[in-house]
Structures are given as structure tokens and as C-alpha cells.
Length: 195
Image 1: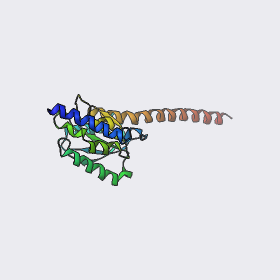
Image 2: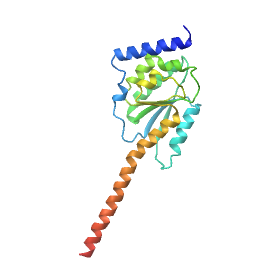
Image 3: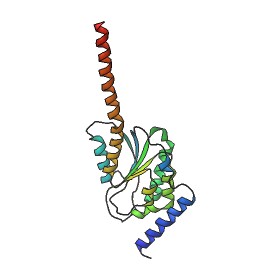
Image 4: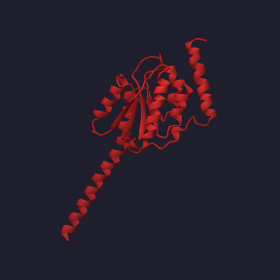
């Protein structure tokens, strides 16, 4: 069988094994933090995807503050499997410092993507105790890693936008409530002065 055939076989067998072990949707069943501020990032330090992700977070127009820590890993090919798993294990040891984990890589085609269909890596993501979000490139074919992650985005930029929106969904109602409270308390004070 060719490369495409091998990829399909790997994809199906990994999905089947994860289903059999009952962990296929485990990560997606975790609670997502109200404010995902503290982010463990698994990426290559030279990755274009990483710089895009960080740029979008840093330059958000509302000045929301995110803390990110890089856990460098290989992102494609056979080295990616033990490399990403090792970084997930490192994050587990300091898990109380983080709200979520993101795995980001720059574009690139299908080359080197079969690692994201490998059972060991996919199981590590599926069973990780924090939500794992992926932005691993412009690939047209969804990988098992993306399917088992809490959420996947096509690009790191899209993933960063999602995190900013999560912040915004909390910040806007809080800000509006603050304005209502200010207005209400000003009215109460005014009435008190009139008495």
C-alpha cells in the first residue's frame, strides 16, 4: 500500500483502539476554564505557527493578558511522537501553573502529518487532564489528534482568535455589569443627597 493507504489504515486503527479503550472523547468532556490565561505551548521554537499564535495573543486590541510558556518539541515526522508525548508529561508535573495546553505548528502540507494519527500520541492527548487545543496547520485531512483534542483550529492564528474570544465573552458582560452598577449607585447617592 502507498503512503496514502498507510495513512488511512493508521487513522482507522487508532480511532478504533481509542474507541475500544473508551477515551476517544475524554479530553472534550473536561471543563473549559472561564479565562484561559495560562497556556502551555507545545511547538518548535522556530515555528512560523508559534510566532503567528503569539503575535495574535500579544496584539489583541483589548489588551487581554496571556501567560504562555513554550515546551519545545518536534512537530512532524517520527521524532514528533516521543517529543510531544515527553512535553505533555513535563507539563503534567507543573499542571497547576496552567489552564490549557496548545499544540501549534505552521502550515505545510500532508508531509510529516502521519504522526498525528499515531495511537500513543493521540491517547496522550485524549487522556490529558487539561483541555488540549490544536492548531497544526492547513491540512485538508483531519488527523486523529485533532479529533480527540478539546478543540482544533485549522491554523495557530485561528486558535489564538478563539482564546481572545473566550476572554471577550467574559470581559464584555463584566464591563457592562460594572457600568450598570456605577449608574445605579450614582442614582442612589443622588437621592440620598436630596433627602
